Amino acid sequence: MKFIKKITLIAILALLFIGCTKAPITGRSQLIMMNPQEEMKLGYASAKQILSKEKISTDRKKNAMVKRVGQKIAKVTEREYKTNFKWEFFVIENAKQANAFCLPGGKVFVYTGLFKYVANDDELAAVIGHEIGHALARHGAERMSRGQLAQASGQVLNAVMIGQGSPQNTAMVMQAFGVGTQLGVMLPHSRDQELEADHIGIVLAAKAGYRASAALTFWDKFAKSGETPPEYLSTHPAPKNRIIKIREIIKKKRLR
Image (cartoon, rainbow, N blue to C red; front, side, top):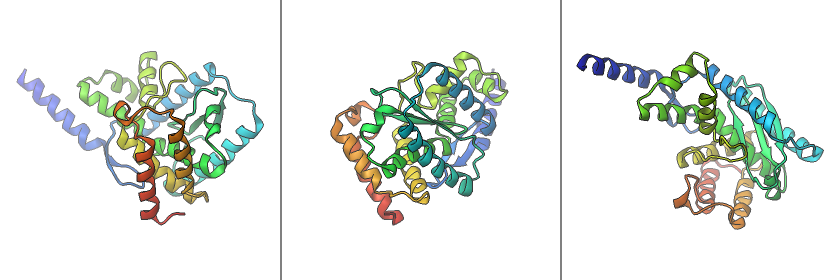
């Protein structure tokens, strides 16, 4: 038994060593125990499931806006962070959901409900930049790795690593990526990841030529909507606190 515990400890320490990486732009240390290629495969599988169940909007104006803004930000990630994602942008017809997400591999989804808070390309860039920031920083893989470490169980992670994801594994992956098993339900990342995605997203949007300050006007409208719960009931930062952090980042980075 002692020998098994010793081997287990050595294995965990090896994974910690192998999995240490840093988030882009912020430089935050991360523990990620998943191969990027396998992570993208899981992202593609999740996107396929979403597309089979959600209604895709036929609104030409909204679709054109999302693709226009998304492609400009995607080019920044390709040019400066060497992503090899297969970018695609979709608008989901759901007026009740004011949200968006990006899966590993570059599949970006925006709900039509978000557009009641988006006045222009700059504000949309703040949102899409944020969601691409999650994917660029590999937040889903990080959350899965933390979960596996906390549970001291490698079954799902092992299946992911060898590319044998079951429906149960796919559900876990989608939760880690911020997409509920009941499609249309958005699950929050940790507060640290949310604020980091804000930071990365603002920089990406600015590099793509959009006004970083538009993130402030977007979140101000969202804060006044009352759609988000109090911060102590959510892992998302409260919009007002988020605005303070974003303003600090804009000032520190000297963005406009």
